[in-house]
Image 1: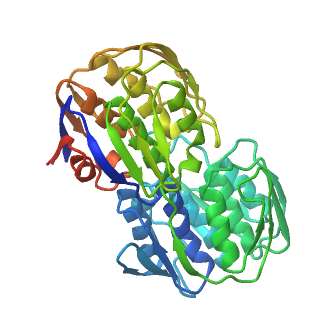
Image 2: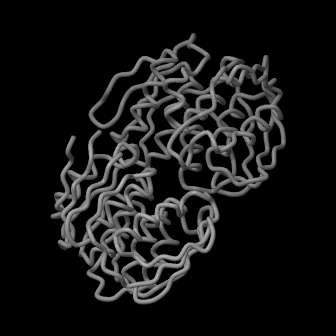
Length: 419
């Protein structure tokens, strides 16, 4: 298994660009199932989760051609209607293929979706199944498989009892080809949702309200395909901003959307990080002193749960106590045990809350990446730490960050990949 070896304690400097958003790309690939025409995707990140998603698409019968910055994806008139467990079990976002398959072909069979420990089989898919049933699908569960069928999906009114990004996107895509009108309420509002809706509308769909709590979809008989450019990854951009602040570095982050990071940028300003914004760039200045600040994760436009792990590392360098309150995933704070092994002073109050006392020097240690976001937090900790840090299981990091070691070396980071 490959690992990262990091020699920490060295300031960084320079310019780093943001890649395409993982959480946008993982939805546009299955969206190609909605049309008989080929879809060209640009700004596609070269990461493990995308490789698995494309492998799933190819296994279903898609013709795939790689392009300079993405791929051309074509689902023809007949495709396989069963997700192969060996692939679906590796990826939580495999659930996104279900709605489009059901909408266009009337049937789909699939295992429980997988992913990392944060997004594996412990996360239920009841919202998806309830939504599909509301549209007229039958749902049978047997031998570890879900089997969904529907001769003709019909529009419905569905209220999300829990705000769900993938649930919102899945039912929105499914409703595009349903008969009649669908009204989705208490929807997620992440930027990836209106990006997907704008693309579908440009190809003939009739979606209103994406990016608000209520989305209305009037079903159509068919849609076209065309071209989709993946939006910049706001989580990667935010992670790089936190990395710059934590390492006391002057770094310019390009090819991003600062307007998608208002919650984080507001917090960074409060803790003493100076920065300058452009239309598609963020310049982080050297932070001489960091102040503590409590955060509570929340659905967009609140503080993102995917930035909680890097922010927790940042607070180990702040002068005082900070309360980190994770409201989305109850396993996300477990990685703090590894930070304490590096010298951090962190008190776990319960599975959802931790108090970080700083500033504390961190020291190099041998670590294992437990999940995608904690993994990149370990990289930041290693860059801060004195001495040598070894991070195993970096497959989890590769799932979401395109060649992160190569890009950080361009900033002066001493990070190497070893088998």
